[in-house]
Image (cartoon, rainbow, N blue to C red; front, side, top):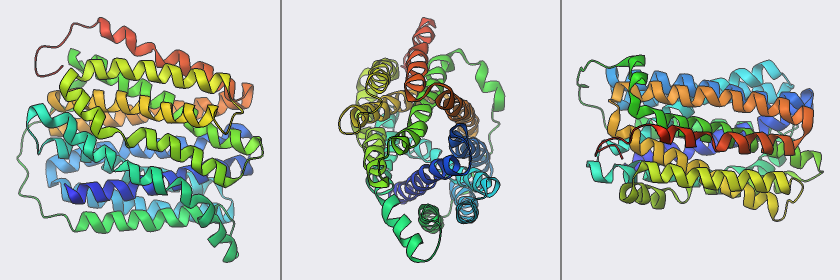
Length: 379
């Protein structure tokens, strides 16, 4: 459990650094609408990585899956660094996508942790691994400005610094994964593959996780360009994103216990309410960097957390190991639309338009509650 925690913490730090810097780099290279492309590349890579990690876990074991994902992520971070240093959007996007593969492997860690605990404790177990992202919340954004200063002192483009730091962090994650104990020969069981999506029990958790991801990614991705447009420094961008990512991860153990006590459906319902409030604040206070945006971004993160932990809690009781990666691939793949769409909305109507559309999307999972309530064991 400790090794899983460490790898997720390092991977989250790396992803936060690279994605935030990538958003700003893309905005400098081209028009504002391009600013969502690095995040889109990252979440696309995460979708591919989750699918790859799920299949490798079923066939070769968790250690091999994590090692493969993190190694590809380390190579990707170096490519992203090259893209940032040379202002090459193509290299930047390729690197972000490969780094996302490592992040996709990290997503499977929560299910691996849940497998170690009995049914009534699965929500807490997976939330403990999600909580590892708190390290990224506290360190990732706050390293952006120092990393940029280091790059400048070396005669490099300032924003290439965070991508270099990201490469170091993901390489350390690969080393931590290497230190995991070897797996026993994985049990060869038939998996449902994509047929798993025919399960009616998947409607609510899948809808909640997809919508939560799209809303969170869309608003979060456009926050750095909004702050940059208002003339704020990288330090301001960093601490506001720290509040957001803190909301995403820091309260995960409490969310997990809540999900174990009241069920995933209630947890998801709370997430819908919190996301609606968050997007409303972002719409009402798009220029308030001292109160409105920090509070909005924190609530945006915690609303995502409620949706993600609630949905994952339900899925951990439903899905076999070989199918978890396919579901995560769909969740992360659909958030590509959040990144790309948010960039287009931002270019057309600004941050308030992004927040308004996100607010409408946030309440859509309410319709999934019309599905028949699952029987005990999947609540």
